[in-house]
Amino acid sequence: MIHSTVNPVQTTAGRRSLTNQSDWIDWKWQMIHRIRSLEQLRDWITPVPGEIEGIKRTKSFFRWRITPYYASLMDPDDAGCPVRRQVVPHTDEMEDDVDLLDLDPLEEQAHSPVKNLIHNYHDRVAFCVTTECAVYCRYCLRKRMVGDGTQALNREELQEAIDYLAAHTEIRDVLLTGGDPLSLNDENLAWIIGRLRAIPHIDIIRIGTRYPVLNPYRITDDLCRMLAENHPVWLNTHFNHAKELTEDARLALDKLSRAGVPLGNQTVLLKGINDDAETLKELFHKLVTFRVRPYYLYHAQLIGGTRHFRTTIEQGIELMEQLRGRLSGFAIPLYVLDTPHGKVPLTPSGYRGRKGDYVTVQAYGGEVWQEYNPDRDPTPES
Image 1: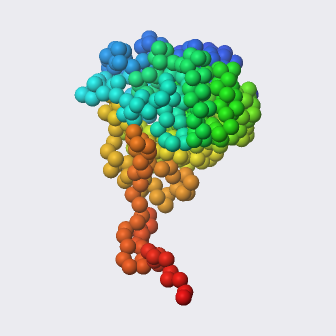
Image 2: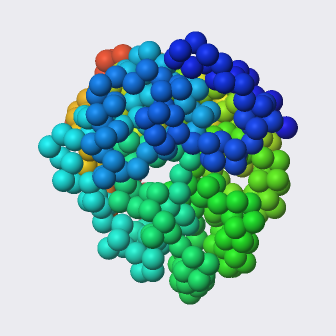
Image 3: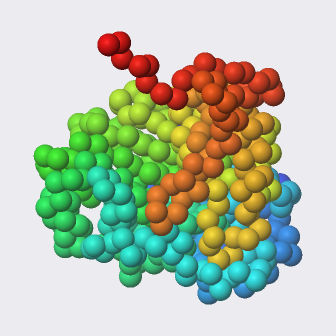
C-alpha cells in the first residue's frame, strides 16, 4: 500500500484541515473532493485578481477541476508557481485567440471512422475511451471534449469501436487515451483491455495517463495486477515540471514498473513553466531516476485560450540544443510538433553537409568532425 508523504492541508490562513490519512490516499476520495469553485480554491491558495477574474470569465468556455493532492503541490502565495499555472484559470486565457477554443488542431474528427476512435496512422489508433480527467489542464489538446459527458462513449459505442479494430487487421497498436483512461474504474478498464487483447492482430496496448501526476493513488495493486495479466501494456505519463515528481508519484511509478509496465513521459513545452534548459534538465534527469524515460517534448498546440503558454518553435529547438551533452542520450526526449499528418521531429540535426566522401557533423560543444562516409556502394570486383 502507498503511504502518502503529504501532510494535512496547510491553508492560506494558516489553518489545518485534518483529513483522514486513509481518505487522502483513496483515489476515489480525491476525485469526489476535487476543487471546482473559488471558495474551495481559497482553502489552498490566495487567488490573485487575474485568477479570480479568470474563473469568472472562462466559466462558459472550459471547465476546471483540481484534485486535493495536486492542489497541495501549488505554492499558495506565488501565482507564478509552475503547478498552479497549469490548472488554475486566468484572464490570460481570454486573449485574442479564444475563438480557437473549439478548434480540432490535429483534425482528429476527420480521422475518426467511429466515435472517438482516431485512425491517423496505418497500423496504430488512438482510442478515446473516456472524456473525464482527474484535473482539467488549462492547455489541454482536447478542450472541445474533456469533461463533456455528452461526448463520452457508452458500452455500445465502445463495442462499435472494438468491432472496427477487430475488422482492420492492419492495426497492431492501440493507444488508450481520452480524457484519461485511468478515470475508468478497474472493471470497465479491464473490460476494454480484455476485448482488445482478444483481437489476434493487436500486439501492443498503450495507455496515456496523467494520473501519476495528478492523483497517484489511482495506481493500486489491483490495477497493476490487471495490467500485468494483459502484457504487453505500455504507459506514458505526463510530467511537465520536477515539482510534480513527488514521493507519492515515485511510489506509484515504482508499482507500475514492478508490474512489468514500461514507462515513458510526454512533456508539453509551456512558456513560463518549463521553457528554460535548467528546468527541463532537472525534469528529465529526475524522471530517469524514477525509471521513466523521457519520450516526447511536445510543442504546445494552437488551442484557444493557450496563447500565453506557447513558445516559438525556434525557442524549443534552441532549448534542445542546450540540453545536448548535458544529459544522457536516453534522458533527452524527441521534440515534436503533432500535426494532422502525424508527429514531425523538430530536432536540429548535427548534420552540416557533405563534401565528396565526407560528411560534416557538429558535436554539442561546437566541435566539427568530418566522417568518411561514401555516398555510393563500392564498385563490385569484376
